[in-house]
Length: 247
Ligand code: 13P
Image (cartoon, rainbow, N blue to C red):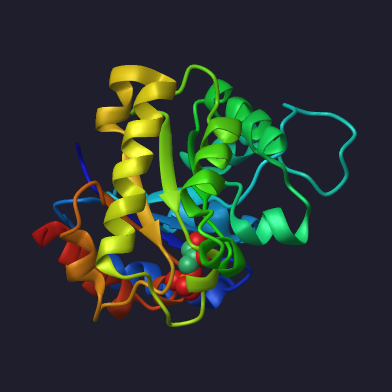
């Protein structure tokens, strides 16, 4: 399995920020893990051009479940692919919260991604209230079961565990909490997709920084990270890439 360092730029960055891409590729031209950046849709084609001939992969942050049609403002998986993306983040908690995305919607989008040859990065994670109520594994299990697309394989699916309360807060779960959820994800995914689950990358996301990356990457069944804020700067994301390469 090739581990995956993924950056989610969210609604940040314009063409001037592409200097971060060249800086990242100058400092990490051939890391021992896969590197992925998911910029806003407006930057996908430009970033793909900036990354041409390099190991850096580009991804979208959402797609529509349909291949084309009268859906103003939406983008299909095939369009992402045409712009240079090979991955798409789906079901991020910010989209589940801001746009009311349900597990069924996430699964439909993920199936559209697979049909377009785009790897789906399906996000799951509990809120703080759900963790406090002891519902973490039940919530994550239900999200996984409801969101994983039919026919998913290790090559076409990545699962990201992002506790909602750890996103952008500087707070992270304990190593034991991350280990518990990731072992649970591997087992549940095996029940859903069989042997392909073994090679499916399970990412941790939520306040991953250069200072905590190495200890998170040492956790069993953590096969990489989905990084928000720290992916915007080449120096920080590069340090996380280096930590994953060394893990
Ligand atoms: P932060 O790394 O900024 O906490 O964001 C995590 C995230 O939501 C990545 O998708």
